[in-house]
Length: 86
Image 1 (tube, rainbow, N blue to C red):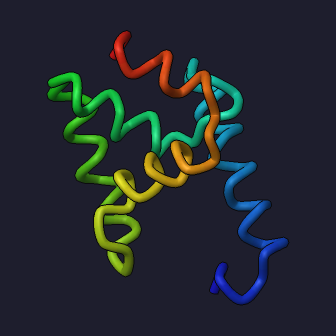
Image 2 (cartoon, rainbow, N blue to C red; image 1 turned 90 degrees about the horizontal axis):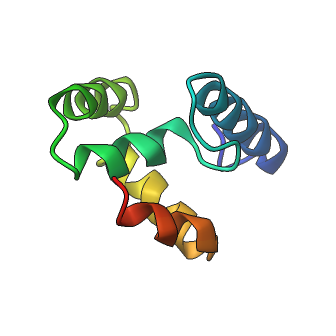
C-alpha cells in the first residue's frame, strides 16, 4: 500500500512522528523506532509495546527494528546520541 504511494508513506511517517511527540518523544523520530530503541534498554513496558506494534504491522518482519534501522540510515545524528541514554 505505502510502497506504491510515497505521498501516503510520508503522511503515515508524519502521523507516527506526531504521535511520538505527543507521547513525549522527539519530534523527528517515529514511535516504532523509539519503541525498539527503548526496548533494547531492558524496559518491560517498551518490550510489550514493541510486541504490540510488531503485531499490528504483521505483514512486516520486525517492524520496530526496521523503523529504527531506517532512522539510522537517514543519518540522523541525534539518534546516535540517544542510544547511550536509553
